[in-house]
Image (cartoon, rainbow, N blue to C red; front, side):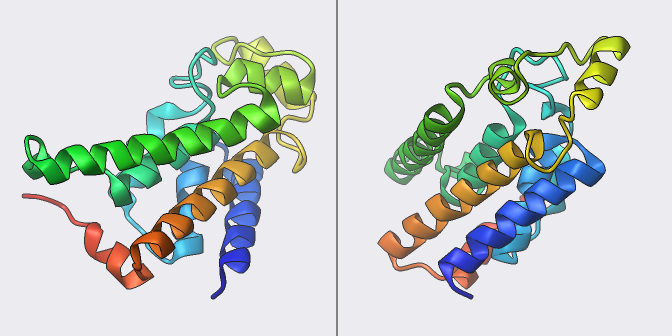
Length: 186
């Protein structure tokens, strides 16, 4: 499958997942995993508390950004075994650099990576998800229409797939090589 097709799958799956199931971080992760054909339910589960700016507090980062950062780090970050090694330091810096690339895409499109600020850009105001009334107003404002917050999730997934595929190409890696990076230590 070509790069553009994988990016489109990530966008569409991220947008639809957010519309249908909610949890922006997990939807971003799922969309990236689907586009790359590499699934890891532990990473998906680890994103459970990161929706709505982390813990639905909205003053943290957008789930489209945090989910993308998690997937970038999954493939290119350091492991605990590598903590003090040169490889570990190098891998950490690669994941930091690639996450900064994703950050800059969010800044260019939304002016921020902060959930509440992204909401303001998309919906004209931000909402406090810890308030039932505000959460309902968020829904009534059309937040889960495909062209609102769903698009932020889709864009986060698409941009992340692009960043991952570009790094793979730079390193001469295949998707099978990325699959080897996915493991669970005992």
